[in-house]
Image 1 (cartoon, rainbow, N blue to C red):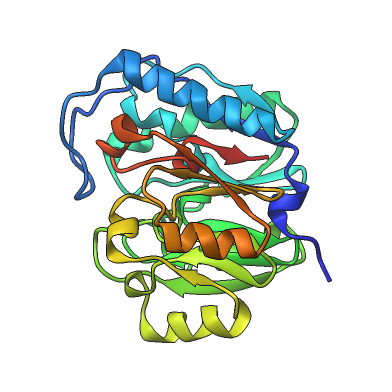
Image 2: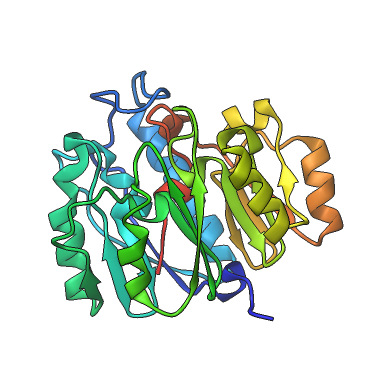
Length: 270
């Protein structure tokens, strides 16, 4: 059996919130004034929590004109020494692409997808549960068609997941792999066919409540046996995770949630 992706995580990329603000609205959650001091404190708490689990954190400076660049998860999808680059759905974020491309090339990654026009928002919509299985969200931000090209990253199965509605616009807002047989997920965010497929392939998955979904609990990162999540995990969910051998580490993400993001949005798995 392939090992879970969370067991294999060694390095991630993060972008400090030097210029993080909410200056436009491209998802239903966006609004409010960012407390920059508090945002930096929250970002550092997440970085420290990741490092505490033995993962190296690399950083890329934020460009002053790109407030959402902190959500580096959307920069692309990395598989071994290759990355399939993002093509943002909204013009407000398209300026980020050139800076990510430069970083990937400078750090030895082979870049794919530079000239492909289909929408793709990287790790926001695509995540490996193990090295052989890619969960591929499509809908508001990423096209289904793009995954035929993403497959060029390597030899793995692509499981397409149809997202419905507008509040859970990225896969990482409603789905977080735990291991090879389970994920934290919010069923109403998916079409019925996708719900059935998730349960068939990940039969031990844990469905979160409406309240947990709105708290972005599914925007969590599993590292080894730690689930790094925004504050809001219900006692019942914590108990179920504990039965499976997982500990929950909650990190306040209130400032980033003003822009519709949380833990996983701030991290790119390398």
